[in-house]
Length: 232
Image (cartoon, rainbow, N blue to C red; front, side, top):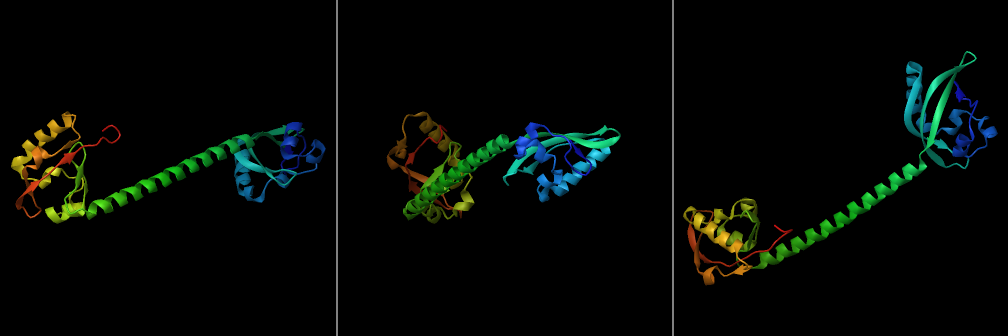
């Protein structure tokens, strides 16, 4: 309990222990002597609420310990009267353990995020290295997902088909063949997916008909392989 000027008038041992003083020492202090100056604006907001409603908080702040360290606390209170004089009654909770737990959790989250970022960077580096290797190949090397959506398109494919990679990414691989062959191609893909084979020479690298960006058709030989990614 303190008066309206912040002078401590009645405290218990638990409060005195929070800020590291004896009860007698605390009674010689004012509320403002144990409150860091940067909380002054916040305190004025709470005092305004107290004057308007007769109550304040709960809110969090810090107290200055006798040793000089800061103690995180949660406060709430009410306006009371004794002998026709107004006083502020406060409930003070030491939340040091809670703050430490929050800090440890945040540190663990930050560590996890850093590890994920490092792993992501490593994977990106591996992907870039793989792309560089694939781009050295003179052949067209194209990857597509189970829905036949193009996921990568190497430099050889760009040269042969006339498309830039960004033009065909996320498009169906059937953009690279005449429409009359789409249905036949889907049946071949369905048959390959159902089989236990992971590699097929397309009927001993038989000639296929492919389609360039400019609309011209050309014969090609192809082989295909499949690989599961995360079970898909």
